[in-house]
Length: 257
Image (cartoon, rainbow, N blue to C red; front, side, top):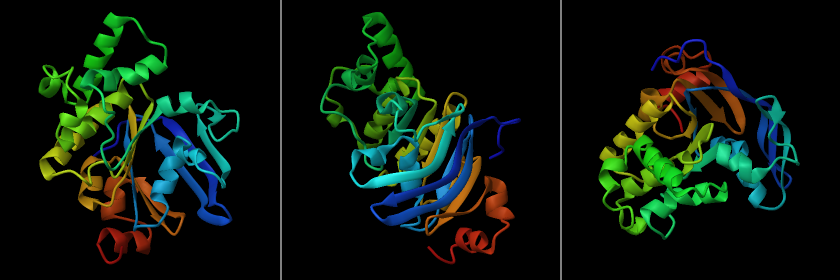
């Protein structure tokens, strides 16, 4: 896919190091994330790509004995700063996990949940934002007559799109996808890929994937990681057809990983 013209840098990873206890997992990672684009993080299992993804919205802070060095800049501020409001940060950088994470409540209440956390209580406005989010996630037509049903009754693919819609409802700047289609059937995966391509007009996405074909289909930019280091980053067409590093060439050709 061709990147948008004149992209604007939305996030910048600057000399990022991350440690689980004394074990260093990320090593001086430097990476720009361009606005209104999809960036895929690829690499073999254990290379640090999910660890990097979870740094963006500080998911690691939920567990003890982890620490960051370096910076992740967003609109000029370092979002790794100890004074960062993590609730607000996680609404700006929403996370979509490998397995769907619907709450055990109605479809409608799943989407409205984050709006209530943001103190949005005007009922007509909430209804409007719920519908908008479900439409953005290409789910409205499938659930518009089931809004009061328990979300756990939806199919796996629908539950994943519901999880995406829940993040979209609070108008994030970035969506972080952690192998978000790996547990889904090909048809459900294709619906999410189609939604992602359409959605980048409104939101920036960073995607961890083991699926090279998916990265090639949906990404504007691709970054290869290896043993906690960023090997190469660039436009997806360049990474897959004219990589600068031999390791990148071997990985995208399937020679290891």
